[in-house]
Amino acid sequence: MNERIPTVAAVGAAAGGGPAAAVLAPWRRDRRGSLRLYLSFVRLAFLKFLAFRLRYYTGVVSYTIFVAGHAYLYRALFASRPEPLADVRIGGLELAEMITYVAIAWIGRSFTFNNIDRTLSHQIQQGEIAMQLIKPFHVQTVMMFEAAGEAAFRLLLFTLPIMVVVVPVFGIGGPPHSYLIGWTLLSFVLALVINSQLNFLIGCLAFYLKNIDGVIRAKHISLDFLSGVLIPFSFFPAWFQTVVAWLPFQGLTYVPVTIYLGKRLGADLYSAVLVQAAWAVGLFLVGRWLWARAVRAVTLQGG
Amino acid sequence: MTSVAPAPYLTAGAPRSRLARARRQIGIIGAYFAQFLKMRMAYRADFLVDLAANLFAIGIQLATLSVLFSKVPSLRGWSFEQVLFIYGFSLLPLGLFNLISVNLYGFASHYIADGHLDRVLLRPVNPLAQVLCESFNISGLNEMILGCGIMIWAGLALGLRPVVLDMVLLLVLVPAAASIYTAVFLSLAAVSFWHEDRLGLAPPVYNVIRFARYPLTIYGYGVRLILTFVLPFAWVAYMPSLWYIGGAELRRWALATPLVALLVAALAYGVWRAGLRRYASTGS
Image: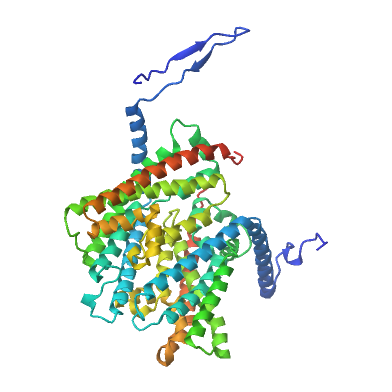
């Protein structure tokens, strides 16, 4: 298993005594070699995103506007209730919790967001995927590690600056118990994995469809709604809450944010994170399966 | 139909008079437009997927509004039907804008980084007209139709009795609001002449549009100032809708919309021209 010396099996000259053709015997990378290979994609992705910084400066502004807009919307909503503002509860949240919900939801989204679907479909449409397919790695794994590199970049140069602006401006407090910070972070890392896997699956559709822009648009629209980033699920009727509890999308925003707010404690907390982890693994396996099928359907355009 | 001879406006030779030149330009733009319309029609599945995505987006917006209004009788004094009217109105200029200018989002990537602007600049038609015509996207139409439907429904619920002036004004306000969208995204596209970046500045700003769909008075003064003067999206839905739902006091604000549109469009075109002058091809 640890042997990685490529043995060269010389194939003797066949008929005619021409120059001996050398054939490389199959060789294996060991685990450490694989890890080193894949980790290098984390670094490369980090550096790649470092080169495009302008969009993140403006992104900080626009995420702040997002939080501000929703904070005002919910402030207006809470103020429009007949009872005194301090007594208003909507969907089990008081106004301060609601503002915190909005802020943490968008801060988390700034970390978990990526464009794997667009990148992958672009590679498929441009035929670049052929070059990926002949390289000795699994494209899905590479994209996951690249997503990690992008997320590391986002965390440092996007999420943290957003926090520096949003937290003081909107007076966002910490969670009711300090240990919940750790659980929230874990939950957002799982949200990152779920989001990346979903995007990978969407990107794979480009093997079957010539253009998946419409699909990606529909995804963005539905995820903003089904992840809970726009409205907490507790605002919705019971049947809707039952439906979304069976979908992976609640793990993108609603689960981590409600953990932060202390709405899930004890067994509730563990099961929520466990369900997230199960979706992360499940979607990864679906991605492996879909990829194996999809590459057989690939038709590369010219080149 | 049977003739294969080129249309007269396509024949070579520079016409002398200003009028003839303008006619030639418009003729070429028309031919250009027809060509890209044909190209779009070649991808019918795209169109259907886009239609579905549009319907879906509007459905989700309506669901969001009705969930929020299921919690309160009115939002800072604005009724569900009033907010719905503003939302319906917002779809008209947005649809009109999407019809011709979707390419502005991808401008940095397609035209600058990939160098397609070279081709545009080599042709004897106004570069901006070419860029806008190349992005013709028929799916804007279904936004406009749905927007009309929502506006009519909300208007009926509000008991509005439109007179001829209201209808005529709609024909002024909607294109004015659409040109504000166009102007904002044109200036953002033009920024990529100075700062090259494939994604450009458009996506985050596009996300701000959703806040233009609520009555401006639900926001604090900071946000109001930004939406009125910096990113003038207050003028794409809320301000013009005031003519119909704002009552005697507020409705005259709507009349400023065309002036704002002219101002913003002039500014944006200036930025675009300045950017175009310093354009240096990628050389690839």
